Image (cartoon, rainbow over the protein chains, first blue to last red):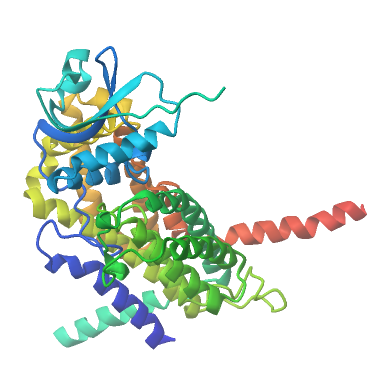
Length: 149
Length: 309
């Protein structure tokens, strides 16, 4: 019993403490360095997103389940990677196909973009939600299936 | 004298680690962890199903999946996800624990690692995955289980104490690591609060701009910068000083209540839920949970008499 007990404790504890020797920023699972609150964030921030563009010119972010597997962070990672690899157009078309399977009335086009915001001012007033800067990486139409009779 | 002191300290630590505990307390922890494994695996299933739509180029394997150069067959992952659900339930009921315990831990590790292997590593299942491994190797079904239904309840023993101590040590170590990560990133300046405020702002803006639910409380709190220094200081202290809670079960309970409050704060300010610690399930073994079993038995024994009367 003692050997098993100490074996389980020492092996798991050593695993949990292993990231003490890792460089800052390296992560893994389930052994983790828990870097989620350690990245230095400035007030002015960039975020990538897929925007649904309506005919009246308004833009709304597309929900994560249409972009990746439903998790917001995974959607961000998917968009960021597509932009970095020059695949923004392919991503745009894939999300457009996902959207077209749902009834998304009024959405004509999608835009894959990087937007810059003042993150603290963002929630103070509606003006804070206007991006300080927006770079569009790809734009694509949303196919609309003909309504069934 | 130094040698005596050193040996005395080790002996006390060894005695504490192997302090006798009731089999029912470990059994309650097993039931809670089994149910959480099943429920969390149910929660992971939609994400597993949606990965069918992701390109293989998005696969970034981590942990036990690191040797994979391509995603494992989608049907296999879905099957393992279903096994994780079933095995979690079997752990909860205590059926053939020497097989279902390791199976549940392995299946859960696989599906939770798979979820993290698409470019984003999550941190909400780490503690549960580690606790599942401990329960897999512990005699956790010696009471309140199908395995033990024909056996008398064993007396309190060190064999039921060490798994509870191991769970406590690992829990504290995980939070200690999260605290150390903050210190490595920004030193004690992290406690000043600006770092936390900007993080909460960043997180909520990103969620809003990615079409997800964000915290209206967190976004409103950003207008009050003075709030964040005490919040950041308390969070950092709870994590970095966590090992001090191992002094006694009483200090562990106080620390656990503070950690539940800490996770409630994260939920309110960032709309990020860590269900296992937030619900207190991660800390059940810190309390004399066997009283639940005693209470349930007393209630069950009383009912036939009432029916007879």
